[in-house]
Length: 158
Image 1 (cartoon, rainbow, N blue to C red):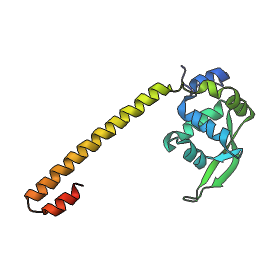
Image 2: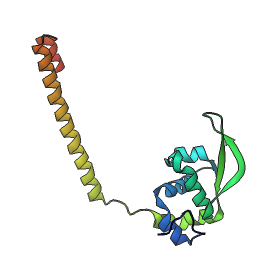
Image 3: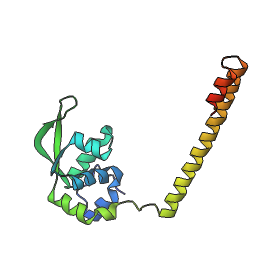
């Protein structure tokens, strides 16, 4: 794959191949927004794209002709600074309608997802067991050091 920072305007299928998760998230925010224009702050919040890479991704999408920066700047509530305002171009709208499904990374199968969830649940169960064992040990140490009485120890172990 070519370096997307120096390439010209690639064809839609090439864009789909180079899109990546963060730029896909940005386009999805535009696609699902109730307004045609969004400021950088809103895009960052809704897409989850880190602020350190936001400009790179917006500039790449703009170079590809999918979005354009408007001449406007909007004040954002936190800090009162002016944020750049972007809108999806006609080409961007066409791309999101025709290519986004192709650009999406293949999903995890239901079985694989179930296995991942089960593995996480097993790990949680093991951590809970370790936590209970640690709590019992601490209560026993506190009893032996005469820091708590038997009644308080029983209450802590319930």
